[in-house]
Length: 246
Image 1: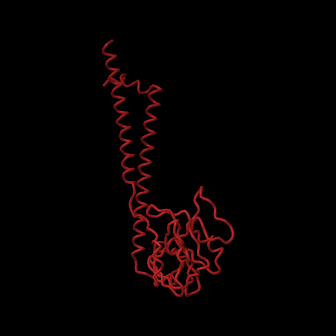
Image 2: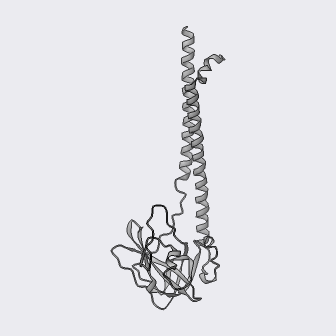
Image 3: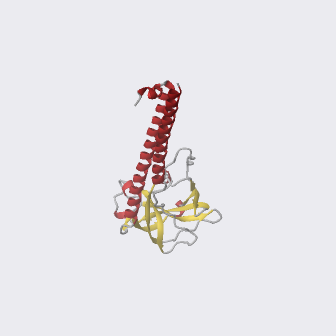
C-alpha cells in the first residue's frame, strides 16, 4: 500500500472534516444513550404506577404520608365529609379533546385531617357539581402536588376559588386544618357523585418514542461513518488516478 496516497488525509481541511464527523458521531451516540435512559425511566415509572394502583385498597388515614413520593399512584379509600365552602376549580385543563376544569373539594377525614379530592372534570360550558352532603366514602388514586413550571403563571394571593394548578401548599393557605401532602383522584364514591363529573384520565402508560429515537440516532451515526468512508475512498481513487496519469 502506498502511504503517499493517504497523505492528503492530514491536510488541515481534511483534519477539520475528520473532527466534524467524529463530533457528529459522538454527539449522536450520546443522544442515543440519553433516549435509552429515558426509556428505562419510563419503564420504571410505568411499573411503579401499575404496581401501586393495582394494589389492594388501603384506608388513607392509615398511611404514613411523611414521604408523599412513595405513595403517589397508590389506590386508597377515604371516609369523611366534604368541605363544600372550600371547593376550588383547577382551570385550563383538557380531557378527551375538550377544554374545561377539574373540580377539587377538600374532604375532612374522620381523624380530623383533610385531603383534597379531585372529584372529576367538567367542560367549560358546565357548572361545578355540588358535592354530596353527609359522610361519603371515596376510592381513587393518590396524586402528588402539582408544581409551577417555568413560564407558567403564578397563583393569585388571598382566598380564591380558581387555581392554575393543584398546588397543595397553596391550597393549604386557605383551608382551616391539616391538609395532607397528597390529593385523591376520585374513581368511585358512595353515595354516588354527580354524573356530570368525568373521572380524571389516568397517565398513559406507554413507552413513547424513546426506543425509535434511540435507534434513529444510531442509524444517523452509522450514516456519518459510512459517508466519511465513502468520501475518503473517493478522494483516494482520485489521488491514484492523478498519480497514474503523471
